[in-house]
Image 1 (cartoon, rainbow over the protein chains, first blue to last red):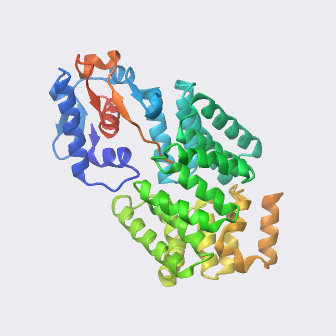
Image 2: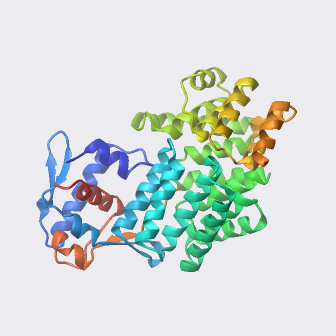
Image 3: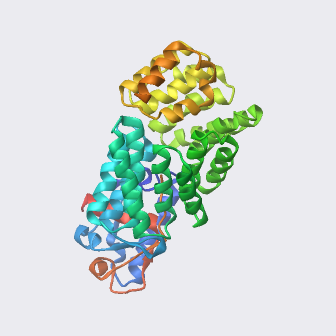
Length: 357
Length: 42
């Protein structure tokens, strides 16, 4: 038996939904089975708890295939591994990028010639490199995976997005933006190309373009908190009032997520700096003062938040801990609006030099 | 990151479970629910 809560959390991890969404999916499933001439009672309701299958069906399910966009076909187990990888990255938490990468690697193991699996793996690996000091040689592996994804699925938006992001993580060059432009031109229905392009534009100092791309992404994705947070930071460089308004929208979205995912790490670590960007310094301070995770991705967000509050000593403590945990995204760090006041600080200079080394 | 799926189609291997027709398509969310239940066993 699987509880309704677990199904809602795992199947709709990136979206705010009600119980009704699950009820509809179960109805659709039963209807589809009936139309196909199968047993309508295959899915059994366990009163006040959840659902289970009437017969052991794993082997049959694992024989099924998933047809993705661009006519790409995945075995169901590879598809499940990618879903799990996606969930790991969305929720964050300890070693999220590493776990996501391992799951995406599992998908490649099951479907070596899948462009989508190779693309997802490249993106997860690039994240893992940036947040856990996995080493630059692994960034070359990410680029290689992304190049293979483009070769396998030249019309896949996500494959070009993966190539752009991997190249951008290396040096943020023109080739990265060209690949990301290609991703967006191919339709980018998931918004991933826009988000990754915004990140690369942000790091290269093109803040207006970064803000435009992130806001467009916010229209495309089910959960807009992540691109809104990025848009607020990019906009802060040229329009503070607008940045505050975007950050306030991000905070509202995060609070909605808390209703369904109260312990989700990503929402937890984003809220502090988002509140600071929105100008609600008191609430930001309260949130940032709560007990924190010692994962680099959480610590670096604490750094952004404390720096925005001009709490430089606490900000630099968080940055130092992030470095100890493997944070290596030096380009990103120096691009943040919150570090403007810190550039002359000797301790900050020493820490950024340590990343470069 | 997130990827979207156009649709899921039933293949011969899954017909014993879902029925004999070739015409059945299930939305990605419904399929994900089915997969999650199948992984949990009966």
